[in-house]
Length: 126
Image (cartoon, rainbow, N blue to C red; front, side, top):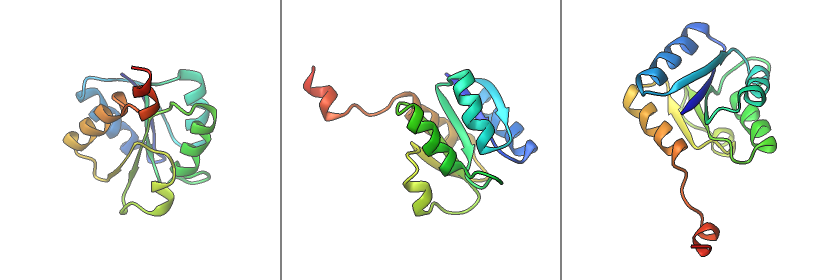
């Protein structure tokens, strides 16, 4: 799976990229803001995005909604140092992970992103 990382703390972005690589996925880019995440998503069309919630200029939930408005099939995982809130839950992200992110939780979230649940409408076509 091709994964984009977005975190305004360079060392955290690098650590998340290392974890994604350990999960046997390809990192297509590491960016430092919500605006950059939106642009990089359009440029790279990754299979998933791992994005920090607390970023300056544009938080991860808002960037998530912007990406989903352009591509409703986008699979975004938010990462936060504080417990999930309503803004995170309403963002459309497939998962919210708490920092520090551990390998097991990231692997599970990436698995969920790669294997979205089948909707009832899709089942009707079966």
